[in-house]
Length: 213
Image (cartoon, rainbow, N blue to C red; front, top):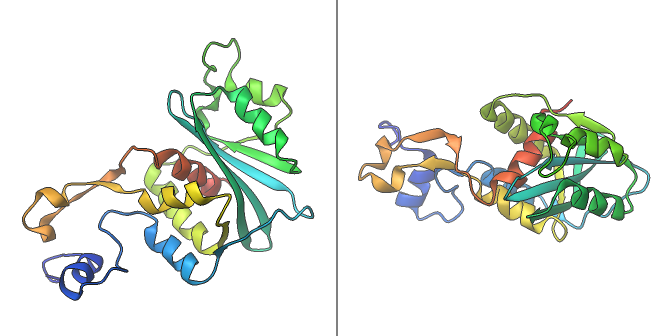
């Protein structure tokens, strides 16, 4: 089956009854598992000696996700996370200001120049009017962003309580996969496009952090 192209994770699951092998199609699960095994998913309190960055993905009718991040040397600390649907940008800006953190910058996706729903201003104008130092993430392909995130995750320490929903999203995020519909799993093909579901916005927000210098 290896020679026929079956993935090592699928082999471990099917032939060696491994429950630790990554489920086929998951994008970040093995990285999160490694962090967990290293004790890096734990309590990560806010350290007022270091500024906080935020990384956003803004949903229209679905969720807006925000990661709160501190960089301490080479370590990237994910100290907090917020995810909520059905609210406008001013609502989330109020939440950010209410955290009591000292911020250095706020990373937004490249489409922040769109007009906010039912408003006369663009999102970037609204954010700056509310005192946010906006950095716009570069427009890269999703796959480039995924590779950047995979490089970032081993440097991370993630708060197990404040970021629980984000951790679950990282574990769940997966490619569109037709493997279950095929009898021969060695021939299963995976789309380059991740499945768009509840986990997309948290993972997109972290992707914008990873690709922004």
